[in-house]
Amino acid sequence: MPVNSTHLEYDASLAGWLRARDVFAGEDAVKAQGEKYLGRLDSQDDKDYAAYKNRALFYNATARTADGFVGLIFRRDPTFKLPEVGGIADVLMEFVEDADMLGTSFAAFAKKLVTEIINVGRAGTLVDWSGGAAGQSGEERAYAVAYTAENIINWRTERVKGRNVLTLLVLQETALDYSQDPFVPVEISQLRICKLVPPQGAADVGGADWSYQVEIWQFLAENQGVEGARSRGKKKWKLVDTLTPLRLGKPLPLIPFVFHGPRHSLPDVDKIPLADIISANLHHYRINADYFHGMHYTALPTAYVSGFDKNATLRIGSSTAWQAETPGATAGYLEFTGQGLTTFERAMDREEQMMAVLGTRMLESKKRVGETAAAIELRQSGENSILNTVSLSVSTSLTQVLRWVYWWNSTEPVPDDIGPDLVLASLNTDFSVTGMPAPEITAIVAAWKAGAISQTTMLDLFRAGEVIAPGRTNEEEIMLLQKQKAEIGKTEIPPTSAAAAGDVIATPVTVK
Figure 1 (cartoon, one colour):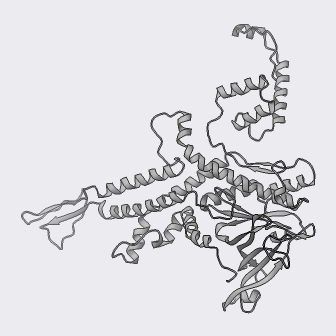
Figure 2 (cartoon, rainbow, N blue to C red):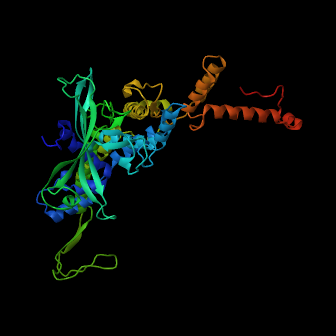
């Protein structure tokens, strides 16, 4: 089999991924695909079809829904649990500030992954060492590289030492060569083959000391090199480099790659979260094309005359009168009547309502009657469950990325030995836009006074309920309370003002 062979699940899912990309890209991308999404009517030539397509409007409800999903998940910043002291703590903090050695913070990196997962339902992260891939020689550190679903073309899992692990991974890349022209680089198709190689002489896949190896293949012409890449002769895949990454002087026992999905972080391809709304969106586009096609031919009244001179020029307007010498001459307008276009309008309304139900209901027209916060939250529970699943799944896979970074800088045998007590990534799972109600605030304060919860727990609950600013720590909040207590103790209220207000000051105010 050729080195660029693709996985069966990849072949089955590629068309859906490309369709999702077109829909999220918007009207220009959808219309550029022509008859792929909008069929040609009978007897339409190229000019008629182009006009038919241009009159249509692509109502991109899918992209708006996806933006709403991402916005709700990142309504609050993701949290990352890291070691507080030590050399590894500094390394992980540097990674969180710059995850890919391109200036992207880990929070922004996570947002990019969530967007990919909501759009196409799949992404991946390769955690590598050193700055060579980023073009920065001499910088030794772990960094992450994100791969889209279309670039993860092949994979295989096998049973190794009692568990299923990734033993083959083929990643599609593009290498840029500036050697000939510093302004116009040469794009070279490249494959990164990540393999888990069994030890020499191992008779089965259950042996020990498996090692991670990397092969770089490029699509070059027969005369290998840059000139071969520039030539238009016959090309083929050629092996140009072989690497064996080392950690502590030994090859890696696993492939440092993490899959991201809407429901799990396994290599298996999962369903696109917005697949149903994508289909409804394209169907709405086709109905819209027929609707505006009908309006084009029927919306404007058409003047007609009978009994007038055929060679006469008749101008339409209030300042012009038509005169005919022929008895019985008539004139009038032809106007469309009937339910044809109304049927299209109702069909588009139903499609828009369907997309609102399948999406987040944020596209649905607002109700004219009042709703309680509980009723709104119950109505959106189905959509929130989708968001919650995506958020929890990506939190798990992001934690695996942090484990790999921690592992690169530690002495643990495998990344799985690094538990949640050391590193943990958490995305927001509270999608309610209403803050904490007053009765709940009172109940939490009462529980703290009764000794049922600690002050730290109370402040954490207030932060989750948006009573305390998200960026303010518990220590900062306590310092503000102490400062407020001191200021209140120093404030003197004039007796006349207190008497005028009918207040009786018995004891100073204290804040615990």
